Image 1 (cartoon, rainbow over the protein chains, first blue to last red):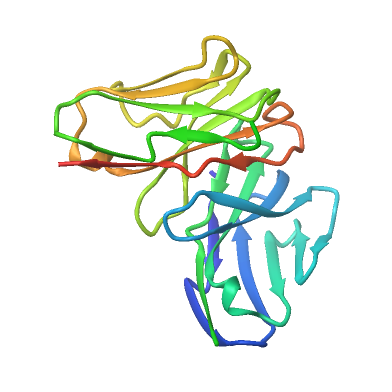
Image 2: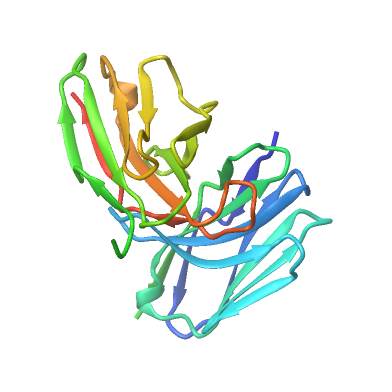
Length: 113
Length: 116
């Protein structure tokens, strides 16, 4: 059974700092991994989608990497801003999990001005 | 539409009441997913539709939960005889391709259900 873990559960950093959020998954047989952002009371906004054949994806100040063999992904945020404050969720679509996408519990990020 | 739309945004139900939650996916999207998100947790899979076919309902927590997508577009999640443990945010997502292909999921803002 696929399990997704995100560390840390919460993070508070000063504005301008570069930071890394971690995601690990137990079954390396995946189709893709997706990072989402969730603001309080809102739905999920897709940030980056990494296919199983890819190693990383970049969008603006965000960079996500994928290492299937070790069951890990990282989301790197450069030059953090107060507007980056949100919960970041990692989600994995397993090739053995049918149609499910399995989510981690998220990392709550607070960027202080 | 421009995005996935869910209604109502908020629903308060008395224990034992039936509720119906609606999801309008992005036009043309084949795949539609329902998730349940408890406070402080990540979303948990409930069910998946490919067009009008419900291909996976393994995440539905009990026989009180039903979902349908009769014409392959709008979907309804119904919860019968609601209980307090049903209180959660119910999220709907759609994607252009089928569930097993590498496609990006787009989420609605969710329906926050509170059972009192």
